[in-house]
Length: 292
Ligand code: SAM
Image (cartoon, rainbow, N blue to C red; front, side, top):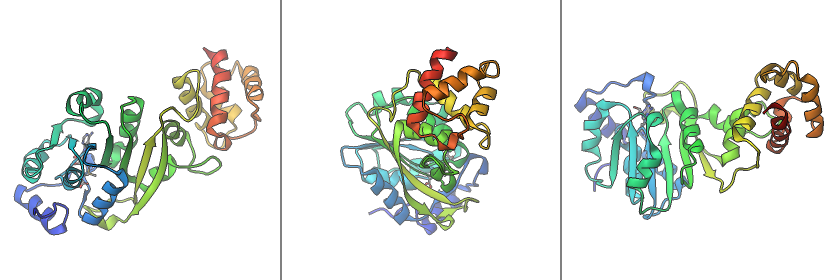
């Protein structure tokens, strides 16, 4: 049996051996608690037929736990200094592969076709670098990759925004974008003490189960997202004022926006945070006819 990578003593020994220094700019906060890691993997509900994609393996703490419970793991790591370390720590797991690349520049679809062509059940599981949490999640969802879901550690505050319901102060265009593609659940709140170095913010693990079809059907997805972003541009403004100041030509078309809101059954004096995703879908379809 190999000793787990994620114990404080083994992590320290690996870091010392390679003289590794953490880069804050790359969001390097490594997990040193095997129980937390196993818990994260539990929430991904993997089987020995599953595949896992990881973003940012670090020294391989989570990669190892994923490798123990899946058929194949592919991990993207941006920091070249970690490659020789991962070669050593993941040596017992030949079905774990590391790709040295920025995930935001990676062609994940092509990778899935070559590396996971015999695997039907695929999850993305990661302790994300916090400086790029949202771009990573949005990239994976917008590319409509054939995944069952995503289980990731992120900032607690971002987890709350992702899973927020209408009428709360956390609810906004991020909640809508992610709830359009997935069903989110916050499955764990994680203390700072299980990381080295400790991050400045509290953390949480969120599970996003990808929907077979989006939560609402809209005429044009890009336009729908544009309307949701515009509606929250200034949270204290009414939906009418946000839309007329944010949409191109909106100031001149104020009367049309009022008519569209009425047609969608939405009082112009309401604020964006009070609208459900279904209401945003209805409104964006009516406005799409006027603005396209
Ligand atoms: N998985 C390890 C763990 O849980 O201990 C490390 C997680 S650490 C929070 C984030 C990792 O992501 C670091 O290894 C960092 O170098 C890597 N990383 C940062 N930006 C990245 C990017 N754009 N693409 C791929 N990896 C990235």
